[in-house]
Length: 113
Image (cartoon, rainbow, N blue to C red):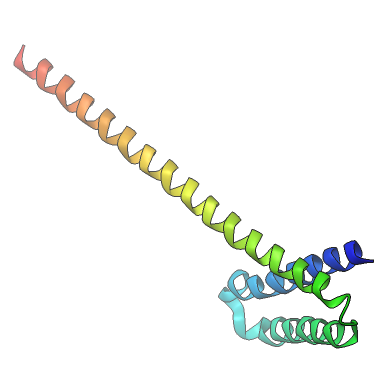
């Protein structure tokens, strides 16, 4: 039962984060989708509250641990992805600067002869 509650906590957190990301995904037409988005977020929060209130004191820590684990994992994955993206961008910038410098030096040599 503890494992099931841990994974249920993960699942509920995934649902809540996905619902929150809908604001960003549908920002281009937020007025049209706002009621749907905020209604879904409200329902997921209410389901979380209902689960927390229904669980016994012995089982509640497993559910909360699943939620905290997934939220922490999500933050770390986002930070790692951002770090990788920045590193790749920096490599592309350095590569383009190296190629540009190489091109300029080749052009300079050709114009001298």
